[in-house]
Image 1: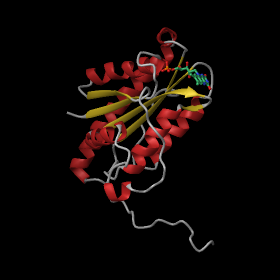
Image 2: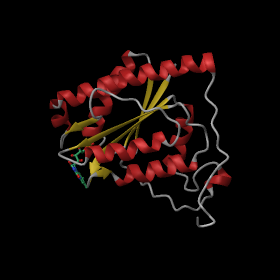
Image 3: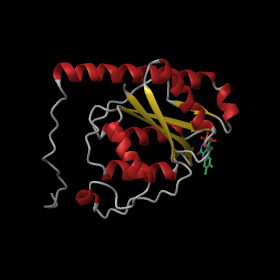
Image 4: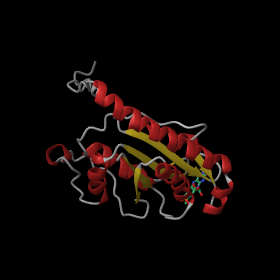
Length: 208
Ligand SMILES: Cc1cc2nc3c(=O)[nH]c(=O)nc-3n(C[C@H](O)[C@H](O)[C@H](O)COP(=O)(O)O)c2cc1C
Protein backbone atom coordinates (compact mmCIF):
# COMPACT_ATOMS: atom_id res chain seq x y z
CA UNK A 1 0.00 0.00 0.00
CA UNK A 2 1.34 3.45 -0.89
CA UNK A 3 2.07 5.72 2.03
CA UNK A 4 2.06 9.49 2.46
CA UNK A 5 3.73 11.22 5.37
CA UNK A 6 2.21 14.54 6.44
CA UNK A 7 4.12 17.00 8.62
CA UNK A 8 2.22 19.62 10.57
CA UNK A 9 4.65 22.45 11.24
CA UNK A 10 2.21 24.36 13.41
CA UNK A 11 2.47 24.17 17.19
CA UNK A 12 -1.34 24.27 17.20
CA UNK A 13 -2.15 20.59 16.68
CA UNK A 14 -5.82 21.30 15.98
CA UNK A 15 -5.33 24.62 14.25
CA UNK A 16 -5.65 25.88 10.71
CA UNK A 17 -2.83 23.88 9.12
CA UNK A 18 -4.10 20.71 10.80
CA UNK A 19 -7.58 21.36 9.36
CA UNK A 20 -6.14 21.57 5.84
CA UNK A 21 -4.09 18.40 6.35
CA UNK A 22 -7.10 16.51 7.76
CA UNK A 23 -9.05 17.39 4.61
CA UNK A 24 -6.29 15.75 2.58
CA UNK A 25 -6.12 12.71 4.86
CA UNK A 26 -9.84 12.01 4.32
CA UNK A 27 -9.22 11.88 0.56
CA UNK A 28 -6.12 9.69 0.89
CA UNK A 29 -8.25 7.29 2.93
CA UNK A 30 -10.86 7.15 0.13
CA UNK A 31 -8.05 6.56 -2.36
CA UNK A 32 -6.63 3.63 -0.36
CA UNK A 33 -3.43 5.44 0.55
CA UNK A 34 -1.98 4.99 4.01
CA UNK A 35 -1.14 8.18 5.90
CA UNK A 36 0.85 9.21 8.92
CA UNK A 37 0.47 12.69 10.36
CA UNK A 38 3.45 13.88 12.39
CA UNK A 39 3.25 16.94 14.61
CA UNK A 40 6.55 18.77 14.50
CA UNK A 41 5.46 22.31 15.34
CA UNK A 42 5.64 21.98 19.10
CA UNK A 43 8.93 20.04 19.12
CA UNK A 44 12.21 21.58 20.17
CA UNK A 45 13.95 21.57 16.77
CA UNK A 46 17.22 23.40 16.42
CA UNK A 47 18.67 24.61 13.12
CA UNK A 48 21.48 23.06 11.05
CA UNK A 49 24.98 24.00 12.27
CA UNK A 50 26.69 22.89 9.03
CA UNK A 51 29.02 20.54 10.94
CA UNK A 52 28.79 18.10 8.01
CA UNK A 53 28.94 15.10 10.35
CA UNK A 54 25.87 13.76 8.52
CA UNK A 55 28.16 12.88 5.60
CA UNK A 56 29.91 10.32 7.87
CA UNK A 57 26.95 9.30 10.03
CA UNK A 58 24.21 9.12 7.39
CA UNK A 59 21.96 10.97 9.86
CA UNK A 60 21.90 14.27 11.72
CA UNK A 61 24.29 14.61 14.65
CA UNK A 62 21.38 15.93 16.74
CA UNK A 63 19.31 12.84 17.48
CA UNK A 64 15.79 14.23 17.62
CA UNK A 65 12.56 13.85 15.58
CA UNK A 66 14.44 14.79 12.40
CA UNK A 67 16.17 11.40 12.37
CA UNK A 68 12.94 9.58 13.24
CA UNK A 69 11.10 11.27 10.38
CA UNK A 70 14.01 10.62 8.00
CA UNK A 71 13.49 6.89 8.49
CA UNK A 72 9.75 7.19 7.81
CA UNK A 73 10.35 9.48 4.85
CA UNK A 74 12.72 6.93 3.30
CA UNK A 75 9.87 4.39 3.31
CA UNK A 76 7.12 6.77 2.14
CA UNK A 77 5.93 7.44 -1.40
CA UNK A 78 4.94 11.03 -0.73
CA UNK A 79 5.53 13.90 1.67
CA UNK A 80 3.14 16.73 2.51
CA UNK A 81 4.59 19.64 4.45
CA UNK A 82 2.06 21.94 6.11
CA UNK A 83 3.14 25.22 7.63
CA UNK A 84 1.53 28.30 9.11
CA UNK A 85 2.86 31.58 7.73
CA UNK A 86 4.99 33.54 10.22
CA UNK A 87 6.10 36.96 9.01
CA UNK A 88 5.71 35.99 5.38
CA UNK A 89 7.63 32.68 5.64
CA UNK A 90 7.08 29.11 6.73
CA UNK A 91 7.53 29.10 10.51
CA UNK A 92 10.98 28.72 12.04
CA UNK A 93 10.42 25.19 13.29
CA UNK A 94 9.47 23.96 9.83
CA UNK A 95 12.51 25.58 8.24
CA UNK A 96 14.92 24.17 10.84
CA UNK A 97 13.30 20.77 10.51
CA UNK A 98 13.40 20.65 6.70
CA UNK A 99 16.94 22.04 6.42
CA UNK A 100 18.21 19.23 8.63
CA UNK A 101 15.92 16.52 7.22
CA UNK A 102 16.90 17.13 3.61
CA UNK A 103 20.58 17.91 4.25
CA UNK A 104 21.38 15.04 6.60
CA UNK A 105 19.58 12.16 4.92
CA UNK A 106 21.23 10.34 2.04
CA UNK A 107 18.42 8.03 0.86
CA UNK A 108 17.01 8.70 -2.61
CA UNK A 109 14.07 11.08 -2.57
CA UNK A 110 13.88 10.84 -6.32
CA UNK A 111 10.27 10.39 -7.55
CA UNK A 112 8.72 10.58 -4.10
CA UNK A 113 5.87 13.04 -4.58
CA UNK A 114 5.94 16.29 -2.60
CA UNK A 115 3.26 18.81 -1.74
CA UNK A 116 3.40 22.00 0.29
CA UNK A 117 0.41 23.45 2.12
CA UNK A 118 0.38 26.83 3.84
CA UNK A 119 -2.05 28.53 6.16
CA UNK A 120 -2.17 32.24 6.81
CA UNK A 121 -4.62 34.78 8.11
CA UNK A 122 -4.01 37.42 5.44
CA UNK A 123 -0.70 37.37 3.51
CA UNK A 124 2.73 35.90 2.93
CA UNK A 125 1.27 32.62 1.73
CA UNK A 126 2.66 32.43 -1.80
CA UNK A 127 6.19 33.35 -0.65
CA UNK A 128 5.99 30.60 1.98
CA UNK A 129 4.64 28.14 -0.59
CA UNK A 130 7.63 28.87 -2.86
CA UNK A 131 10.13 28.27 -0.06
CA UNK A 132 8.65 24.87 0.78
CA UNK A 133 8.46 23.67 -2.83
CA UNK A 134 12.20 24.23 -3.27
CA UNK A 135 13.06 21.36 -0.89
CA UNK A 136 11.21 19.04 -3.29
CA UNK A 137 12.43 20.41 -6.58
CA UNK A 138 16.14 20.16 -5.74
CA UNK A 139 15.62 16.57 -4.60
CA UNK A 140 14.13 15.07 -7.77
CA UNK A 141 10.68 15.03 -6.19
CA UNK A 142 7.73 15.72 -8.53
CA UNK A 143 5.45 18.32 -6.98
CA UNK A 144 1.71 17.64 -6.86
CA UNK A 145 -0.49 20.54 -7.84
CA UNK A 146 -4.12 21.44 -7.32
CA UNK A 147 -6.81 23.74 -8.69
CA UNK A 148 -5.45 26.86 -7.01
CA UNK A 149 -2.73 27.85 -4.52
CA UNK A 150 -2.26 25.14 -1.87
CA UNK A 151 -3.39 27.40 0.93
CA UNK A 152 -6.13 28.00 3.44
CA UNK A 153 -6.98 31.23 5.23
CA UNK A 154 -7.80 31.72 8.88
CA UNK A 155 -6.75 32.48 12.41
CA UNK A 156 -8.65 29.55 13.89
CA UNK A 157 -9.69 26.10 12.64
CA UNK A 158 -13.29 27.41 12.51
CA UNK A 159 -12.21 30.12 10.04
CA UNK A 160 -10.59 27.50 7.82
CA UNK A 161 -13.78 25.40 7.84
CA UNK A 162 -15.47 28.41 6.22
CA UNK A 163 -12.73 28.64 3.57
CA UNK A 164 -14.60 26.26 1.28
CA UNK A 165 -12.39 26.93 -1.74
CA UNK A 166 -9.26 26.36 0.33
CA UNK A 167 -10.60 22.99 1.49
CA UNK A 168 -11.62 22.07 -2.05
CA UNK A 169 -8.04 22.86 -3.11
CA UNK A 170 -6.80 20.44 -0.43
CA UNK A 171 -9.09 17.66 -1.65
CA UNK A 172 -8.02 18.12 -5.26
CA UNK A 173 -4.39 18.24 -4.18
CA UNK A 174 -4.72 14.91 -2.36
CA UNK A 175 -6.46 13.31 -5.37
CA UNK A 176 -3.76 14.53 -7.74
CA UNK A 177 -1.06 13.37 -5.37
CA UNK A 178 -2.63 9.90 -5.08
CA UNK A 179 -2.81 9.70 -8.88
CA UNK A 180 0.83 10.77 -9.30
CA UNK A 181 2.03 8.25 -6.72
CA UNK A 182 0.22 5.44 -8.52
CA UNK A 183 1.37 6.62 -11.97
CA UNK A 184 4.99 6.78 -10.79
CA UNK A 185 4.76 3.30 -9.25
CA UNK A 186 3.44 1.93 -12.58
CA UNK A 187 6.10 3.75 -14.60
CA UNK A 188 8.82 2.49 -12.25
CA UNK A 189 7.71 -1.08 -13.01
CA UNK A 190 7.66 -0.50 -16.75
CA UNK A 191 10.70 1.70 -17.30
CA UNK A 192 12.64 1.83 -14.02
CA UNK A 193 13.68 5.11 -12.46
CA UNK A 194 15.55 7.67 -14.58
CA UNK A 195 19.32 7.76 -14.10
CA UNK A 196 20.59 10.52 -11.82
CA UNK A 197 24.08 11.99 -12.19
CA UNK A 198 25.70 13.12 -8.98
CA UNK A 199 29.40 13.37 -9.74
CA UNK A 200 29.64 17.14 -10.23
CA UNK A 201 29.63 19.60 -7.33
CA UNK A 202 30.81 22.94 -8.67
CA UNK A 203 31.55 25.66 -6.14
CA UNK A 204 33.96 27.70 -8.26
CA UNK A 205 36.96 27.09 -5.97
CA UNK A 206 39.28 28.79 -8.50
CA UNK A 207 37.32 32.01 -8.04
CA UNK A 208 36.26 32.21 -11.73
C1 LIG B 1 4.52 34.64 14.97
C2 LIG B 1 3.37 34.69 14.01
C3 LIG B 1 3.51 35.35 12.81
C4 LIG B 1 2.46 35.38 11.89
N1 LIG B 1 2.66 36.01 10.69
C5 LIG B 1 1.65 36.03 9.79
C6 LIG B 1 1.83 36.62 8.49
O1 LIG B 1 2.91 37.09 8.13
N2 LIG B 1 0.78 36.62 7.66
C7 LIG B 1 -0.44 36.12 8.00
O2 LIG B 1 -1.35 36.19 7.20
N3 LIG B 1 -0.64 35.51 9.19
C8 LIG B 1 0.38 35.45 10.08
N4 LIG B 1 0.19 34.80 11.28
C9 LIG B 1 -1.08 34.10 11.51
C10 LIG B 1 -0.99 32.60 11.13
O3 LIG B 1 -0.21 32.39 9.99
C11 LIG B 1 -2.37 32.07 10.79
O4 LIG B 1 -3.28 32.35 11.81
C12 LIG B 1 -2.31 30.58 10.49
O5 LIG B 1 -3.46 30.23 9.79
C13 LIG B 1 -2.20 29.77 11.77
O6 LIG B 1 -2.13 28.40 11.45
P1 LIG B 1 -2.12 27.30 12.62
O7 LIG B 1 -3.42 27.42 13.34
O8 LIG B 1 -2.01 26.01 11.91
O9 LIG B 1 -0.95 27.61 13.47
C14 LIG B 1 1.23 34.76 12.21
C15 LIG B 1 1.10 34.07 13.43
C16 LIG B 1 2.14 34.03 14.32
C17 LIG B 1 1.98 33.27 15.61
